[in-house]
Amino acid sequence: MNVLGIESSCDETGVAVYDTGAGGLRAHAVYSQIALHAEYGGVVPELASRDHVRKLLPLIRQTLAEAGLSTADIDGVAYTAGPGLVGALLVGAGVARSLAWALDVPAIGVHHMEGHLLAPLIEEDAPQPPFVALLVSGGHTQLVAVEAIGSYRLLGETLDDAAGEAFDKTAKMMGLPYPGGPQLAKLAEQGVPGKFRFSRPMTDRPGLDFSFSGLKTQVLLAWRDSDQSEQTRADIARGFEDAVVDTLAIKCGRALDAAGTDTLIVAGGVGANRRLRAKLVEMCEKRGGRACFPRPALCTDNGAMIAFAGALRLAAGQHDDAAIRAVPRWDM
Ligand code: KG4
Ligand code: ZN
Image (cartoon, rainbow, N blue to C red; front, side, top):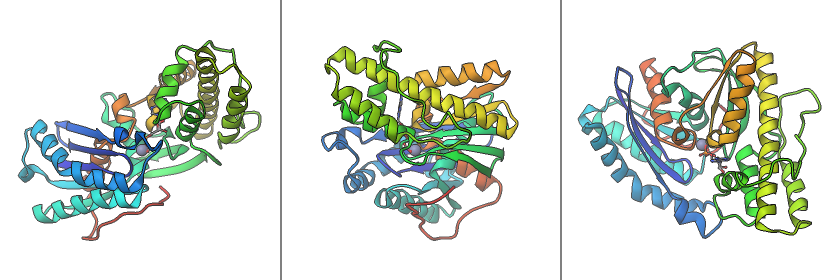
């Protein structure tokens, strides 16, 4: 079964075809709107919607061509139904639902975070549940015990900023261009470890929740009182990154203990962070377990994770009615 996946919840238009048979991920393409939003320092919802309108159909044509398929080969359509920007979601949902109706195939709305969560399973040698998933994106920081696909138990989450949001806001405070997270991570490579030490929030007490907003304030004060040189900026970036990475690693270790497993999967944009990947691999190996990540391109928003999550549900016989679903706020 070839499932077309469409992602349009924020500032990336993503399209993919996933084959539930031997083909696996047949093609995927992402168009990023970063350049469009850069001059505003953040995503402008109305501009995002309009750009999805412009890019989605050409990207579907391109992806089908890359997969060597035509619309007649599509057996189902999966789209991100939420959470996200409602206008942006409506573009993907409208196109997906209409296409499914025209082709007379089933459609299914997918939860964006379930897409992220399942993305590591697209890769070869993927683990099977039970495992713990760390979801770290611009909007979410969650630890989830996965007993089976579709059976999720929230172990902990952020009480304020998401990890990606903390990266982005901290980067902005230090004058880095949007989108700050990856830029800050790049800058941290030049930073001297230990030059600035920030706290590891909420690790001194039991529990699996996170809080990153205080860390942001610590960085703001350190930056304000510093000489604000290029090297200092890199040193602070390194101190901040180490604090976030350590905090996430400590809580992941506790979550594995709580769930009684040694397998961790990591997904969401911050999962592309090199230091986080290295740290979590080391932590899991020490316990005799493993940490699994999707390739970096499948950590950030993409159509492949939506095609895959939708394909699993469609293959299990689930599908939606004819309604176009766009749910801006939606618990997984
Ligand atoms: O999953 P994603 O693409 O979109 C959401 O669903 O939010 O995640 C985007 C987030 C942004 O906050 C971005 O700054 C962060 O992931 N991010 C990173 C890195 N690459 C992306 N944060 C730290 N290090 C990176 N290498
Ligand atoms: Zn995302």
